[in-house]
Image 1 (cartoon, rainbow, N blue to C red):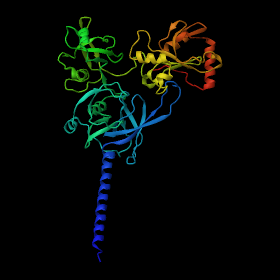
Image 2 (cartoon, rainbow, N blue to C red; image 1 turned 120 degrees about the vertical axis):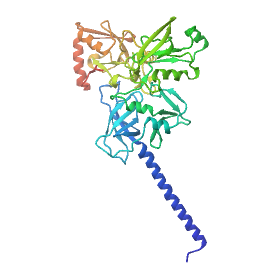
Image 3 (spheres, helix red, strand yellow; image 1 turned 90 degrees about the vertical axis):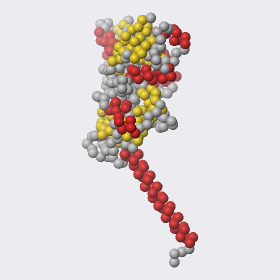
Image 4 (tube, one colour; image 1 turned 135 degrees about the horizontal axis):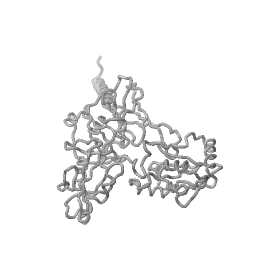
Length: 466
């Protein structure tokens, strides 16, 4: 009636397998829900392509997918592409029918971004970034100041035992955010709080404004700081960020904000000096604009140098990395496309830009990018020439530095336009690097402008506003 003993054993095995399978499937579903829906969600941040070599064109939009956390009241935090201009974002999930989210804050250095969901109450669970909760439940460890591969901003991060994803993610203890994981780093939650509590759309972290060497040879120590004790050697000073015109490479810094550097040990001096510049007495990151005082030794004299902390930006560099606000400036005259030399212009030649682009421009970008020039505001280049009937003979001119117009040295696009409009002469001589010269009459400029617009349909022949 009940079958053989062997059949009964087989039925029991099947039942056990079924119970284990259902239990495992249910656990997997629950685990997936907790990770996907409780702590973080997938978002897509949309950007618009901007070309420095074709700045009059409207670029196609593109998106970057990443993880985001809900900070409360429909406000989300994510880490996306740096040095871009985000347009909007969307939650990429079947569980949340959320419309496009507004970008309310963005740091072009780190890619930190705040998003605001509008007209919806179906949101993911809010996470906890409270300072006390993080300190109580999240473990610390060895930390040091690092610069992310896409950023120049020093960030104090914990070193992970194993390498994580190549894309930014989050580390949790239940619903408490312990930090941002990236490669083998854990960026503490304090950086999320600092960014969230900032003001305005553009939010950034403080940068020292200068860099230094702490590992000096005995002969270097004797040469740079003899008879004055232990200090740190200034290696770079950045214009527009720090005390570029009062602090110079070769200076020795002896004290920072009233704290002497005499007793700092060499093995952790770099991080301790960063703390003295970027953090207050309680160890919290200072706000942008905080006063910094340095005691500097130069030419056998001690000097007091004061400056305000600023975020890292290249707008004051002779060759900035990006155009101001990612809005490339340009001016087209006689079919000649003039623009400013930037790092992004060179890199648009692709991964082999050092081979494919003009060698002189690569050299200038490498060695003069972080410098300021006493006369030049920018390096103005002739990118290329639009072929027109009126500029035949100059159409092979490409990636040349504009030196003068009618003998006037040109240091900005605004000055170029002003020179052409102010000069009362009927002819203009453009002198470029390599001894090349182009000459046009005033009538030529008018005729070539009409020809350019008729053939190439370029409505806007200039962008000179920062």
